[in-house]
Structure formats: C-alpha cells, structure tokens
Image (cartoon, rainbow, N blue to C red; front, side):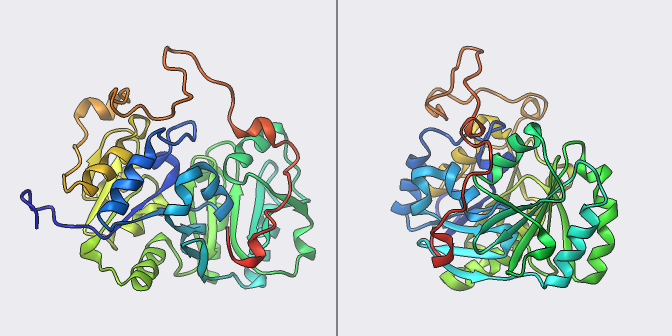
Length: 328
C-alpha cells in the first residue's frame, strides 16, 4: 500500500460514451500521457463498451494499440489486437428481436457480426438516424436480416426519442427467453445472450490477465455499466451518470465534459485518489483545467467546431476487411 492507503491497481477499465469521451464523442487531446503513465506502472488500461470493435478503435485513435478492449457489452475481448473471447446469440433468439423491431416505425436494428455491422433493410432510416448511427458504427452495410445465416454477437436498437420509455417495455419479455435487454443511452438499447455483460467481460479479462478484483478499478455512467462495479475494488461514476449508477458505484467524480475520467485514471496510475465531484459539479460541467486541455482541435472561446465523423460517412461505407481475421 502507498501512503494514502490506495494500493496498486493492475487493471483499469473505462466505458467510452458519457465517460472517457465528452458529450460530443471527443477524446482528451493529451490522453496518451495517461496511457504512458499506466504502461510505466504496469497497469493494463482497458476500454469497455457496448460498441463493436471498430466503433471503439476509431475514437481511441493512437491509444487503441496500447489498450485492451472489451466490446459488445462483454461478448468479445481483445488483447494486443487479438480476439481472445467471443460469445454469439442463437439465431432463433436474435430473429425474435428483428421481428419485434419491425413492428415499431422509426426503430433501427443493427446486427453486430464477426464481419461487421448490418442494419435491417426492412427498417429504413433517415439522415438524422444516420448521423447518430455513424457515431458508434463508423461503417455498416444494409441487408435483409431474415436472410442472414451468419453468427450474430449483439443486436442494438436505436430510437431517437427516449428508447427506455418508448421501446424497452416491448422487448423486456425477451429476457424470459434467454436474452439480456439493456438501455445503454437515451437513444440506444443493446440485446445479447443472457449472462453476458460488461461485468462478465471484466471477469474474463481478469482471468486472462491473472488479475483480481482488488487490483481492478472501473469507470462507468449508464445502466449497462452497473455490472462492472461488482468486479472492482473501486468504481467511479462521473456526475452526468444515470442515478442508478451513482447508487451502486463507490466514488463520484466530476462531469465527463471536464475529462474527469482521464484525470482520474492518471491519478490512479500515479498512486493518488481521484478528486471527488463537488456539489457544483453535479449541477453544471466545469471547463477542464488548463493543464489538461482535452481535444486540441476544440475551439475554446464559445464557438463550436465542425461536425464530427458523420460528415465523411453518408451511405454506411464498407465493412472493415480485417475483422474476419480476428484482428483490428
């Protein structure tokens, strides 16, 4: 133990959206400083997301090769760019999701497979939904889901108006049939095989690395992050987190738009306890300190920069050809 009683961590796991990324999906500009601090002290830094691997690697950028990944809400684990674990959904189950999804106008169903992401051709989407879709799936193809015979790892649902209220109740009965149904954001739901979660993903990662719960810290903000807390000695929730997450996690930190998660990971790597969120931080996000500037391309005088990656993806692009080889 160090002087403050914090002890050493061997594995630090962080969610992306609403956590490591700011509200515009941007990474802190000097995040490599955090990565290098973890590497220096022998800490494995892991991104854990409901996104598929391409949607994780894209925002991480140059940090991705230095990190382990838990993708698809625990269904796939990547270490050193190599796929080490994968769990798929039986076809009869994911087809029930597709058929129910087709009953709801405006709902988009996305199938994550070993060969990329596909949207169901029976559910057309407009420019607004495409802009939301590309934030998490930088490339995808369109197919008739009923004719697809390949393996499906995860099914995601996107609905632009409070998916928890308007869509979730229709899919909850599928939990009695062997599926796990979770809201992951205001517009998103993820459905996977029962018993697979971010928590089991961390447990599998710990087993692969030979790391225990007492050596693990996690960061999360939404409902699908709750299972992470049971696998860690310390769990940190930003001020913007869902109220249920704040009830379960052991520590509260400032809003993610202050890049609080990056700063907290750096503190842990340096053997310090992260700064707790103040009451003011729960009411209004603070600007990050000058020493931690975040995204270097961000215009900092009240102006907005140009739109993100959606400006370069209009028709879904092409599937990442390296996926069938099990590497990113």
